[in-house]
Image (spheres, rainbow over the protein chains, first blue to last red):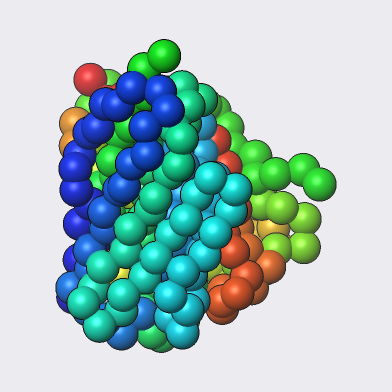
Length: 113
Length: 115
């Protein structure tokens, strides 16, 4: 049974700092891994999607990496801003590619001005 | 393009009462998902529809939860009777089809509080 874990559960950093969020999964047979952002009272916004054959994806100040063999992914945020404050969730899509996403519990990030 | 719509946004009920949530997916999306997100946890898939047929309902508590997607468009999720542990945000998502690389797009969710 696939399990996804995110560490840390919460993180507080001063504005401008570079930071890394971690995601690990127990079954390496995944189709892809996706990072989402969730603002309070809002739905999920997709940030980056990494296919199982890829090692990383970049979008602006965000860079996500994937090491399938070790069951790990990281989300790197460069030069953090107060607007980056949100909960970040990672989710894996199993190799069956049926659409089901299995989520971690999230990391709540606070960036202080 | 309009996003996934959900209503109501908030609902407070007493235990043993019933409640229903509504979802309107993005136009043309064949696949619809209902997720349950308990405070401090990630979303968990409750049920997945392909058009108006159920693809996966393995984690749906069928003794109290039911869902339907008539005509393959809108969907309703019902809880009857509600328990305290049903307090959560219920997220609806849709995708053009289920398989990658078609991403899921999420609605704003319905926050349910059971007292």
